[in-house]
Length: 318
Image (tube, rainbow, N blue to C red; front, side, top):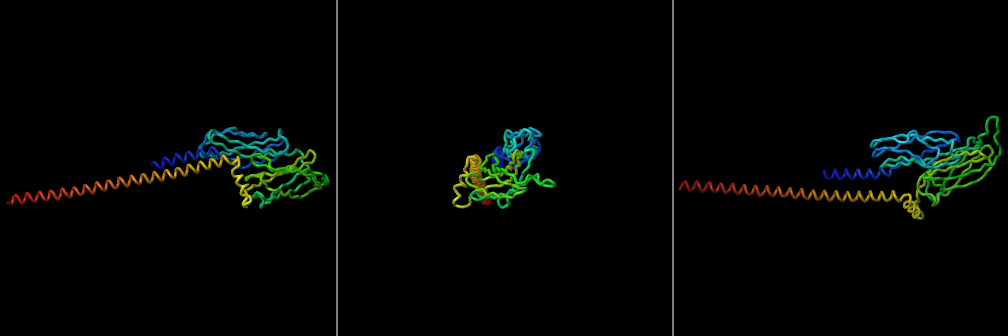
């Protein structure tokens, strides 16, 4: 019973710690034309239950409900509403926060707003073998630029100068790469871009964007990829710097504390087990000793009664 109660208390403490730092990494990515609106849904699961409040650091976002109540272990799917009417055209990276008194969830959001009229747009694609890329390697992306006015009886805008703006963001909203270039497009053009994944990239998830600009027309396309640390000896120092970066220190300290508590609990339980086993052997040995002494005394008394009985008979015969 002692072991079970101690283990139960420890389990509750661990669940408390985990519930405080738990997060949801499902990206909500929305692309709208200026003036349009849409909605996306995401789900959280509470470890402890409670009253949860919703908030966001992104303009143009709201919620179908601003708060809700969950029981322990209950899941909730809620809607995030996006309205681009009062949001500038471009790329907006932020977070949706779901918080209670003991739990905190963070949902990364990419809110992309195109111009109302788009003449040139594109399709950005990162090939599958580059979706997970090592630091020190080159990321390859492919962009298909399209003149949206081309087709039917209209032959498009013809050869036009188009500006491209490349950017890469981490899910916490930091821009780690940008590049600008201009080129001439006649109807359609396919190009590729190679980007060195250097020390600016920490291990984690990223979104790559391309703005295609022609006058007041802004088209935007995007794709996601993930970066992992070096595996070569030359990159060990960079990988370690990733691991011990400021963003990861809180998580590392928490993991270390949980590990130390687990080790301490295991050592404590082993010592308690040995102590109880020792006491059990002591009481078992003591009870056996008492039983042996009792049996020995019973034998002595029996022998003594036997002798006394013989003496009385001999005396009577005399």
